[in-house]
Amino acid sequence: RKDSRIVCSSLGGDSPAQSQLGPSDYVAQGVDIWTHRSLDFAPNTPFLIVASKEHLGVINKDLVLGSLDGSGIAGASIINPVNGHVIMSTGSIALDLQKAAVNHKGHALHYGGQLVGVARSRHIDAAGIVVISADQVSSQVLRSLQTSVPIGLLAGLLIGGLFYRSLGMRNPVETELKTALTRRQFSLHYQPVVDIASGRWIGAEALLRWIGVDGKSIPPDVFLSNAQTFGLMDDITKEMIALLSRDIELFAASAPSDFYFSFNLCASDVANSRVVAQLGELARACETKGIDLVAEITEQAKIDHESSSYNIKGIQNLGIKIAIDDFGAGYSSLSYINNFDVDVIKIDRSFIMSLGKNEASERLIPHIVDIARNLGISVIAEGIENFQQAEILLQHGISQGQGWHFAKAMPIGELVRLVSQYSQPGGASANLEASA
Ligand code: C2E
Ligand code: CA
Ligand code: CA
Image (tube, rainbow, N blue to C red):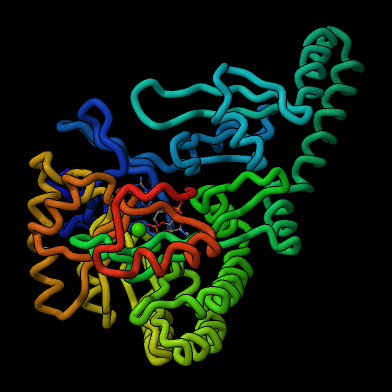
C-alpha cells in the first residue's frame, strides 16, 4: 500500500498495476475497512479490503462465503446492522428474515421453519447470519446416527440432495421483489434540501421505500443490491419515475417558486437509453409546473463512459440537471467532473461526519469548493446532523445542505403539508421532527 494507492507488483511487470483506494467505509481500532471496493485492475470484482498501518489484505468476497456451498447451509451473509447493507452473502436469505435476525437480541432464532444463527461484531458494524432449514438440522442429526448403516446414509444423502435441488429452484428474495413490484409496494419519501443559513427548503430528494405487507419500511440499501443481482433495477427505476410523476402532480398546487425535485439513478440506469425516454414525459410535466429536476448519479458506481455520456447528455437535453452523489467517497470524483458536464456535486456524508475533528477529509473541503466554484458547479453537503456541522459548512462557503438536523425523509403528503411553511425565509426551524 502506497499512500492512498494499492500497488500490485505481480500484475503489470515493470509498471505494476495500481489503483486508488479512496476513503475507507469504516475504521475500527485503527484498521481501515472497505466493504465493496473494486480495483482499477479488477473492475468487476468487489473486494473486501482491510488495512492496518503495516499490512493490507485484499479478499475476494465471493470466495469467503463461497466455501460454505454444499455445507447444508441455506444462506449466509454479513450485514451492517445499522443500515441493513449486505456486505457479502451467499445463498438466498429473505429480506424479512435478514431484518428479524439483525433486530434479534440473542444468538439464535427460529424463523419461518428456519434456524438462524446471529453473531455480532463488538468492534465494527457487522453481523454474521447463517440460515439452515429446521428440517435440515434434524435430518443431519438423523444422518449422523445412520452413518453405520449404509442404506440409511444413502437415504440421507438422497433426501439432502433433493433438499438442495428444491433450494436451488426458488429464490425468495427475487420472488419477493417481483411481488413487491406487481403489488406496487414501493413508495417515495422526500428529504428536503435546505438553504443552510435560513433553513429554508429549496428542493427535495426522492428516496425509495419498500413498504412491506406488515406496514414496515425496508430501506433501499437492503433491496437495491438484490434488485441489481436479479436484474430488476430497470423495473424498479421505471416504478420510481412513475411514483415521482404522480407525487409531483400532488405537489404542484402547493409548489413554491424555484423548488426542485432530485431523484437517484444508478450506473445501470444511465447506461440504459429507456430511462432517458421514461424521464421525457416527467420533464415536460415539470416544465409546465415550474418545477426543476435533478438526477443524482452515485459516484460509488463505476460508470461506463461510452454508453453513459450519450444518455447523460440526453437527460440534460430534457432540462434535467446532473448531480454527482456521494462525491469524494468513491475513487473517480475528479474523472466524473472531467468526463461529464456536471451541474451539482453532493459532498459525501463521511466528509460532514469529520467536521470539527481536524481530520484530513475536512481539510479537503475547501479544495472541493474551489474546484466547484471555478467550474460553475453548485455544492450540496449531505448528512448534516448537528448545528456545529452546519456552522462549519457555512464557514467553508457551502450554503446548501441536507440532513437530519433539518429534516428526515417524509411521505409526499407531509411534504405538501409543510412546504409552504418551510419555503419562506425565516419560516424554517431546524430539528424538525418528521417521519424517517
Ligand atoms: P443517498 O442518495 O446518499 O441518500 C441519502 C441517504 O442518507 C438516505 O438514506 C437518507 O435517508 C440518509 N440520510 C439523510 N440525512 C442523513 C443524516 O443526517 N444522517 C444520516 N446518518 N443519514 C442521512 P436512504 O433513504 O436509506 O437511501 C440510501 C441510498 O439508497 C441512497 O443514498 C441512494 O443511493 C439509494 N437510493 C434511494 N432511492 C433510490 C432510487 O430511487 N434509485 C436508486 N438507484 N437509488 C436510490
Ligand atoms: Ca442521493
Ligand atoms: Ca449521497
